[in-house]
Image (tube, rainbow, N blue to C red; front, side):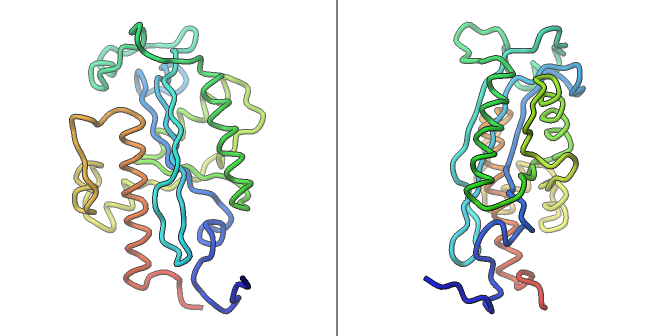
Length: 214
C-alpha cells in the first residue's frame, strides 16, 4: 500500500517523535543516589502506534536485580517499596545481565521501528534516567540505546494537561485504573505510566494539537 505523503498524520512512531523511539521505564531502587544506591527492579514498556497515529502500550520487559557489589541499601527506601533484595524467592539476576538484555531488546525495537535512538519516558523521568545511565556506566555498556540526556517526563506533562503530577492522581484523571496496593513495583508503575503517556499523546491528537499546522 502506498503512503500518501500529503497526509499530515504520523504513519509511524519515528515520524511522530522526530526519529526517536519512546520507551517507558520505571526503576525501583534502594535509595536516591544513582551512583551509590542499588538498582533493584527495572521495567521497560514499548509503545504501539496504529494507522491513525494513536498510541497504546505494547510488549514489556521486567527484571528483578541483585544489588551490585558494594551497593548502599537505604532501609527507608526498602520499607517504602516493600522489596527484600535477598528474599530467597526473588527471581533476581545480576545487574549486568539485566541491563544487557534490556538494552539489547530496546536496540532491536529501535531498528525495527526505523528510529535513530530511544528516549526514556518516565514519571519524574530524571530519576529513572539517572539510574539507567549509572547502571550502564557500571557494566561498561558499549551500546546504550537511550539518549544521554533527553527524556519525556509524564509528571510534567500531566501537570500541564491534567493539573496533576502524582502518578496515581494523574492516572485517575486520565481514566487509567490505578491500585495503590500494587504500586511501587517497576512493572506495575511502568505499565500505568505507559498508559498515562499514551492517553496524553492521544488527547493532543483528539483536540487537534497534533499534527501541527504547516
